[in-house]
Image (cartoon, rainbow, N blue to C red; front, side, top):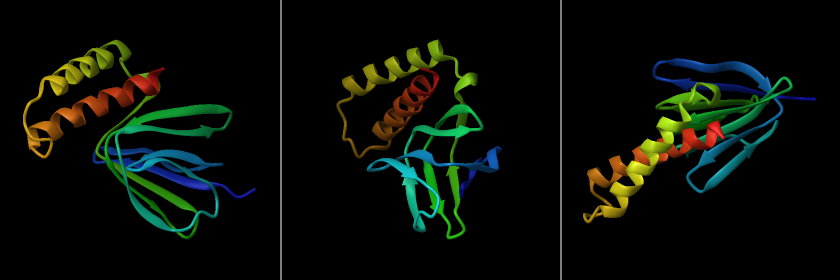
Length: 136
């Protein structure tokens, strides 16, 4: 059976590089993307969320920030994200607290949703929410 070759890369280095997986689920801007072998080539944005795949017999969840995904013709999936953390490395209590605080600030925000301040708050909430979901 053909596999997907997966790379998950951040500015700090590779989280996974060249591993073979049966498929991978990635948070996209219009919902979850499921990528299997022989997927058509594409480039799309990735949003903060949880990447899921099986590595050997283990299910892997990695919280990621925003970035981009490229599916290449040779069955290679390259995910470039601003940050990533393995579910086992998440401090779930701290992430939940930070997520809840960001949610309160978002709920109290009175400015434009197009303002950089709103975007920063939303990004903080989304990153912490991704960590909470990866850890659970």
